[in-house]
Length: 345
Ligand code: ADP
Ligand code: MG
Image 1 (cartoon, rainbow, N blue to C red):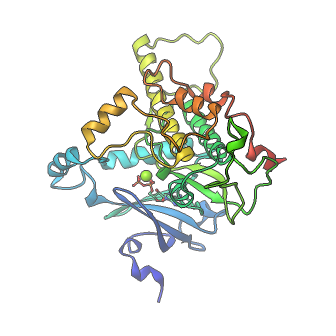
Image 2 (cartoon, rainbow, N blue to C red; image 1 turned 90 degrees about the vertical axis):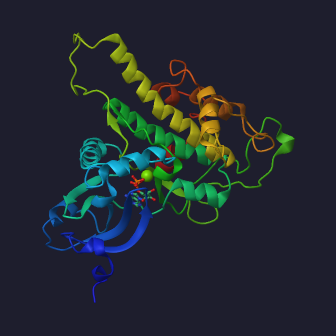
C-alpha cells in the first residue's frame, strides 16, 4: 500500500507523493514529498529528490467559503489571525515566485497546483526545522551564532527590499535552516563579555559543537508579504520619478516593518525570550507602540555593548531613525566576525 492512502491531501495532488507532515501554520499543513518520476511536473523537480508542499485547505479560507462573512467576523477577534482568500494565496504564490531566485537565504519556490479542495505550494525542502525550535532547545544563542543567523536573515531581507517586497511576518517560526556538521571556528568558545573575569560557558552554543548546528538560514512564508513598488531592474540614470513624497515615505516606512522583525528575532536569539510580551493583548500592543522593552538582568549582563546597540537601532519606535537594511548590514557588531565567510574560505 502506498503512503498516499493515509493523507486526504494526496488524492487531488498530481506528480508528488506525500511522505510525512513536517510543519503547520494557521491555515496550512506542510508535508515532505517526493516528486514522481515521469510525473506531469517532474521537469520542475529535476534538481530535487524531495520537496516541501505547503497545503492550504480551501474551506479554511475566507472568501472561498459560503459562510465567509462568519469567518471574517471571527478572524477579527482572533489574536494572531491571518485572513486568507483565494486572492491572497495567489498573491503569496506570485510574490514567492518573483523573489525566489538569486538568494540562497530565501526558500525556493518550485511549483503551484490548485485542486477542488486544496492549494498546493511546492517548495525546496528545508531539513533543519525552525530557528524557533533551536532557541527553545538551546535556551539562547551565543553572540556568534546569533550573528551567523541574523546576517543571513539580513541578506534575505536585502534581496526582498531591493525588489520592493516587504515580508511583514519575520519571526523565528518562519526562519528555517539547513543543518551542518561543523563550522570551523577560530573564535573563542566563551561569550566575550565587557568584564573578562565574568566569562561563563553556560548555555553557550557554538555552531557545530554538540552535533548538528545551523548552516544556511532560509526565510519562508510569504503569506503576508506585499509588493510595495515595482522596481525597474535596469533603472537608467536620471529617471524621472512621478511618485508623490507621501507615497515614497509610506513605502519606506513599510520596509522598516521588516527591520523591526529582524530586531525582535535578534533580541530573542540573544536572551531566549521575546522583547515584548504580555498575556493581555492590549497591554502588549501598548508596550510595543511605546517601544517598551528592557535588557533584563541577569540574562543580558554578559551580552556585549555592540550587540545591544544593534538591537537598539532595530527596535527604534521612530521608523525614520530605525536602521534600514543597508545600515544594518554595515553595523559594526554584525561585521565583527563572520562564521559563514570563514566557512566558505
Ligand atoms: P503559514 O503561512 O501557515 O504560517 P508556513 O509557510 O510558515 O505556513 O509553514 C508552516 C511551517 O511549516 C513553518 O513554520 C515550518 O515549520 C514548516 N515549513 C514551511 N516551509 C517549509 C519548507 N520549505 N521546508 C521545511 N519545512 C517548512
Ligand atoms: Mg508561518
